[in-house]
Image (cartoon, rainbow, N blue to C red; front, side, top):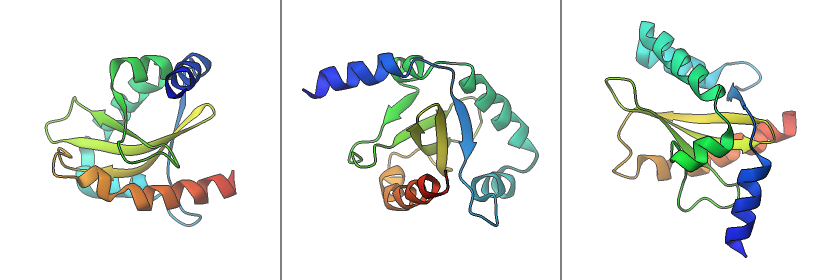
Amino acid sequence: MGIPLMVWAVTRMNFKPDIELYATLTQEVIYDDLLSNLGDSIVKVEKKLSYYSRKSVATLLRTGTLDFINGSSNPRLYELKVKSMASPLRFVCALEERTIILLDVIYSSGSNGAVERRLSRAGLRLAEWRTRN
């Protein structure tokens, strides 16, 4: 049963997604975090994200660029890797209708469980985003 559902999700979500950075009501959390850690190289990140926004979600899932995070099923969270930068950069994100929501940003390779440690906070941020939208 799980495989047909995934096939359905991929075929139904074949669209060019919008990308939204998680923010609280008073602060652009992810954008501010990117600026403080990357400074001027934020432009490279924005260019890379605009590249992703031109791709369909089905393509992102099929190429493995947008990877399902093991251990996250409710809500289902994904990891988006920006591979064009000198230092590792990855986002914990969710798919909501036509939008990829970047919920958290990690400045490491993720091999030491950094991504999994962010799941709880990302889940809370997604719940908050859903109540506002």
